[in-house]
Image (cartoon, rainbow, N blue to C red; front, side, top):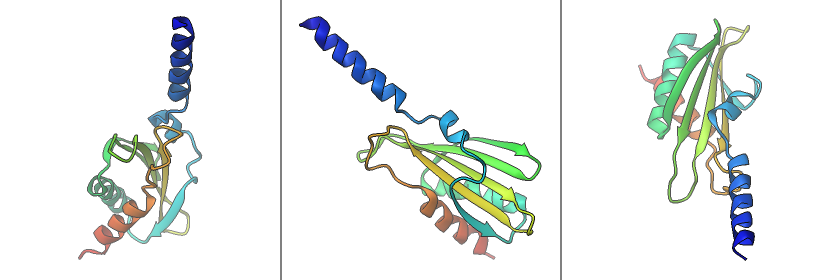
Length: 135
């Protein structure tokens, strides 16, 4: 009886652990994945504005890295709340050949069964538009 209960708990814990999104899992999609928006400002300006937009949206910025000279990857997360187990977010800021800067947002749920997880692309783009249109 006890061993059956322990086995069930172990199985449930294993399933939850396997289904968790981490910074590594959000880092792996192609750089052109996610919802995109294009900006006419220079790459350094858009990169710093994106970091500020993430912070003002309520995300914690974990790392900023530069996969190549024309691309920045910003990883962030939102922790546990009353309505969600949290999300991990990756934002790619990339200079495109047409001269514009593309910003792409990928959001993953920390727990696959979390139906109340938020997609952070709209809040990030909304704040980014506000920051970049200020004089």
